[in-house]
Image (tube, rainbow, N blue to C red; front, side):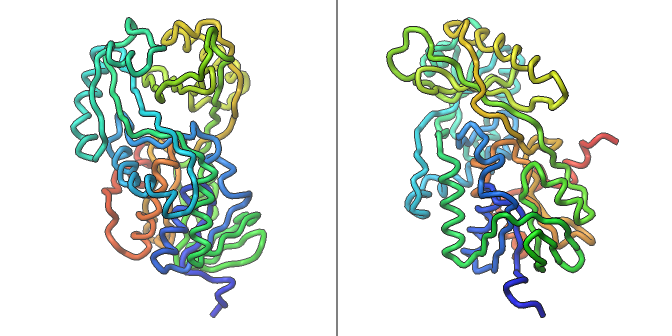
Length: 374
């Protein structure tokens, strides 16, 4: 039998916020954990987000539930993990721009409330009270969700990682996985060979590539994304105070950043030349909804890669047949901060053979593979 140095009960591939959450929850449950990260913890998708934790995902009650179930842990994080997340309350304002869109989103609100999300429908006038920069003439209605916070993602990663290590988990950086034998649980890496009873793929945009090493199809891939910021807006003496504001029709997301805005439009193609086209579109899009920001110049705050799936929701579950040893938690499309607490507990329970606290059907491999091109 291999010694403990080279064997483990649970081996996690990926050290973003989801991976370290899994490490923490499993180590807390007394599971022997080894986590491998090819770079440094949280340097990939975790650090490249809008730095927000929210509990409302307009067309996806299942995503809202995943976040809501992590809210208690999130709110107690500072005390439990002895780590300051730098919390600032934002609230989330989702802008609806047509009667048809309003009817569709309103019809789903009872499902979100059943999942535990705090949401209410607003008139255009009420929406502008929450965000005075908006133009009421462009708004049909809005949804207000108070449970949205700005957070320091690097602090969340460090809190989970430190707590997991104190509980006995072994966390290795600079360890790239080069081969996986799903049958035996053998994992080859640039720092040595390991064996595990269960192997967790939590490698973000690289989840699909890691799964291929085990001969498994996991429909997760990376898509380029960019976050922008405006110059300070004219006649602003104080910082811009506004909630996280989302326009689902265009994909525009904004929040205050000093005396200007932080602006997001996700899922940009990597195809040559399209980034410039998208950038010009973002320049044109902002003043449609924020006329007072007309003429504001946009600059890149960061560019990076988000892990996405066919459903645009995360993948959570266990492989079957020859891949039964493989667990997966990836593809959270930049929402890992909100979904990491519950994802950690779900993987813990799947490893132990316990029914998870949520219905995994919307996050299943079968649901995502069904949407893949033939």
